[in-house]
Image 1 (cartoon, helix red, strand yellow):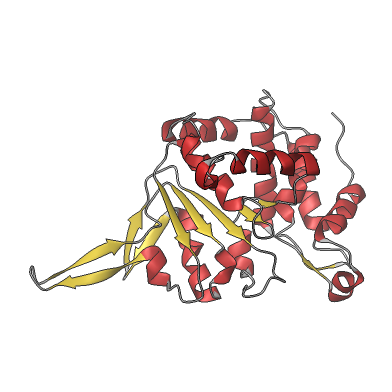
Image 2 (spheres, rainbow, N blue to C red):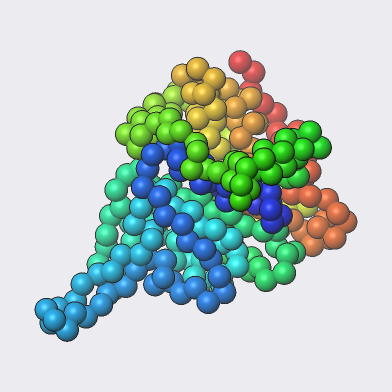
Length: 279
């Protein structure tokens, strides 16, 4: 999951709190311009004492990984996450290491126009299931946050450490299996495919979503259905998933971006143009 928002909106705080609720092994990588790929995945060292090589595993060897401010590191370092995000494995000096399930990657990033940021490669973006945009809170929400944080010494009133554990890694695996078993009838799958294909044949979009986008639409729709207590997906589930699933998988035409239209506005137009099946 990719979380995007301006600095100070609680993106990192949110992931730290989620890590507490999951009870899973957790590691955080602070991405900086001087971070190297081996700082992420690990590397091989030669031990003079034993006169042998051994692997020093990097922070990706965990269950819940936070790549904090991922777009502050150059593309070469960002790309170090490609294999682990797609296949839950890491290759170090020709040797492949499989990570213990469940493995989840959360990343935070600042908007591209912020100083000192690098755009994520398309291949990297496509591996995120969802992109969640975090906006400023309402006046009432902001007042509540300020009151809660300022009421404690050191501003720790909303510390993630105070969040209770609600589930275990085994619970996460079971939930993933249950979501995968949710039924997807052919008409709804075709609707997800048609939505994805519509992003490739649109004058306002230069790069549309690929097949992974359609797969992610159905996977996310299944999760929504499970949360709603259903064992089948509907066109409404697919529509609900469309923005978070597709917004990071398309590139607007230059003239559209200059005109001030947003990715979400263009996607909403695409959604309206594709007829949903009746149920």
